[in-house]
Image (cartoon, rainbow over all chains, first blue to last red; front, side, top):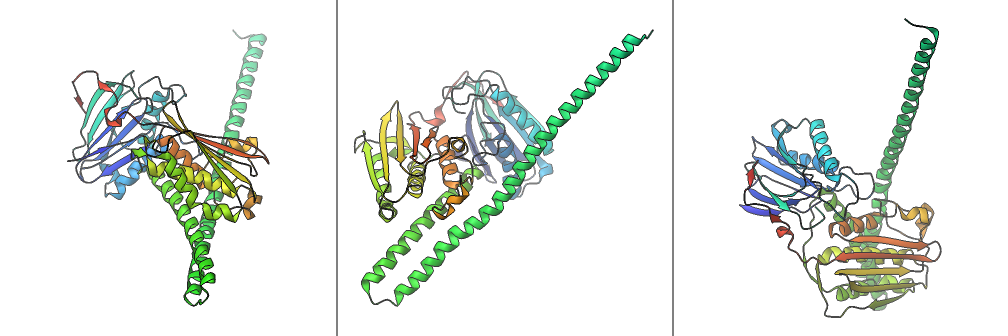
Length: 155
Length: 286
């Protein structure tokens, strides 16, 4: 199985078997999985909404989830077969992002975006005061999840 | 039992509620108007962007095609050399613009991530200046490089991305300088971070425009179109890459006296994959 480390503000989707690792603080990762095609994709965003300034990168939740779905559809997935899992959004004291309640707002936007896209949420581990390390298996849609003491501030 | 005063107070209450509802509605309408205006602007930008891209890609290509065709029938070697230099400068510009376009596309697709190596920043910047020698001498610009770092010094970062940030800033400094101007680059390494500043004495940026300078496709003044080129993608790319490298980019400027851009990029010493320690060994499966 190939391994992939997912950086903040990026996304990944593949129709082959991958083990995708990412570390989350106040950031949120949405894992999408097509149970028929057995294709998985994951994003890792830092802020809830793109405010129209700068590049429209998957650093922002509303952009990241939409783009991830788009990538999955390009790989041949059908929207009706896709389910979602949400991770992260802890209230980590973070010097890089000054906004208040950023974790909570990141979780909220994931739920809203998925509801708008009619994608059911089948699993989640969000909020709290701890960081998370997750390993996503794109072929099975399973996520291995561990709580961690966060040491770096940006994700 | 209802008397007049309770009736009046109830009526007053309802009127007030009504007023409040109208006020809220007005506020929402205002918000809607703003959003609408933003949509219009982005639509205009989109069409503007396509026509700009056409100019910036097709025009250099046309000159490259014509110049190279001319060379094939030239007998005067000096003339041919001049044409070759022109071809080079057009191709150089084209290459730079395409790099920015692809960088923006990759950033927006979430497909690019830091590729960390040891970077010798001093030689990176020196190479960059060398590659811009043509446009520097065309505008008779004087460039100085002050560095407090050693020639052998290197730090951990993404060399390709750093180079694109710096070349965008240098390119801008050249574009917005007047002929015979001065550009000063300084490099230092403090608090575990690489600090790059570039100062020009060109046209400068108005205070209220400084905030939007890193926005996508923003060209601050349409009237300067004849003096300069570029469609404002460069700085938004530089900003997005700087964010990705956990750095900061900022600008100070006085109109008519020039601008100073600073980029601070922290050294990457911790292996990103090892961030954080597990609280316990019990992983959960979702």
